[in-house]
Each structure stands twice: as structure tokens, then as C-alpha cells.
Length: 159
Image 1 (tube, rainbow, N blue to C red):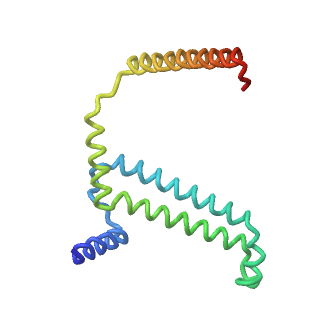
Image 2 (tube, rainbow, N blue to C red):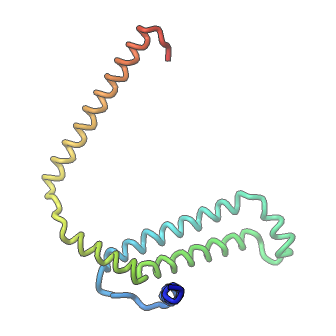
Image 3 (cartoon, rainbow, N blue to C red):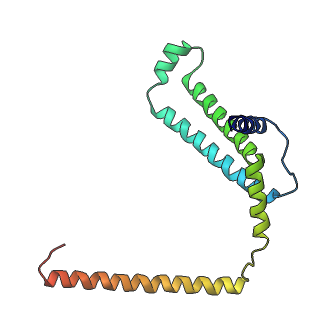
């Protein structure tokens, strides 16, 4: 059991730091979209980290205590943001090529080809039905709300 866990952990780390693409031609679109979304989330998180770092008052302490004026705190903040973004992009690239996850994305793309998509007219008709039902339900809920409000006021309960 312990030997199996160590092999699994070794294969994960081995897969994490290799650069080859797992099953290049299969599930390309799904993997590219997944990579783009995860990389975008990582870059936005890095950008947000830069904003959080600038809002705290550690700039002066960092420049005086650690760097002693050699590099500005803003430069350190930019380097940290770029490193976090680069690590996030690399990890998202490796994620879509990790064996288990790549096989999952390949099967997702294969299943999506089996879906029967509606025609444009069916889509428009269905959307109109959904929007009309939403407005009818909103009117019904508003009427029930006003009705209960009148009943409660008639009973002497003020809201």
C-alpha cells in the first residue's frame, strides 16, 4: 500500500515537471479552453495580489529593513505578481496535460460531440417561453406578497 502511494506521488511530480503534451490530438479544444480559463483566473489572482500588497503599509518597512534602498518596494511587488502569474500559467498548462485530468477532458469533448444541439428557431422559442414564465411567476409572487401584506395590516401587524 505504501509502495503504491509513493509510486503515485512520484508519477504526479514526474508529470508536473515534464514538458511533453499528453495525447496531443485528442480533446484539443476542451483542453485549450480549460487552459485559457485557468490561466486567466491565475493572472487575475496575481493582479489582485498586487493590489492587496499595495494597500498594506509594508512598503516602507520592506525598503528600509530588507532591501536597504537597493530596490523599490513597487519593483518587488511587480516581480512577485509576475512570478505568481507565471507559476499559475505553468501550473494550468501542466494541469491540462496531467494524465487523469487530460483523460477527463478528452472524454468530456467526446461526450459533447454526442449532444444534439437545438436549431436557432427552437432556441429562440424556448428562450421566449422561459422569459414569459419568469415574468408570470414574478407577477404571481408580487401579487402574493401584496396580498399577505394587506392581510397582515388588516390583522394589525405592521411590517
